[in-house]
Length: 122
Image (cartoon, rainbow, N blue to C red; front, side, top):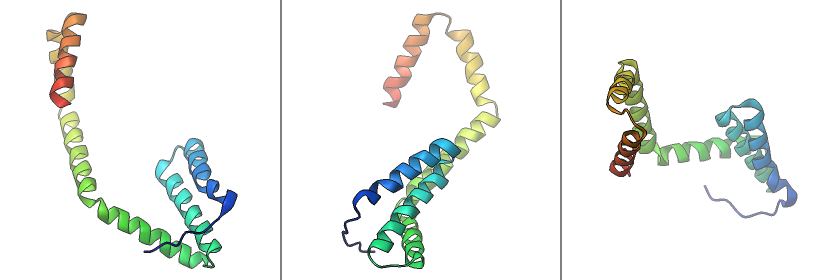
């Protein structure tokens, strides 16, 4: 997928403004980003002499290429999400909270535990 650089002028600011405004209004990040991406590809396609169908083909082609490039990261994040849900549903978060409540009585001990966890995972 090779793109040729074209000059669109002031219309180049429409996609990011549209995506940010829609995300703030609707609270739907993914659909707002998709609409912003599609509007940018639509502007590019019309400026270079294409049609709405070529814009749709470019949009879905670009999205599928990016998803394929990041497939390992997507799989890792899905598995990490599953482990977090499993620990939460099985009561692991509650049990850790109860343990911390019984062991960490002072502000100093809580700060020390926090510093140790930060240094371990950094």
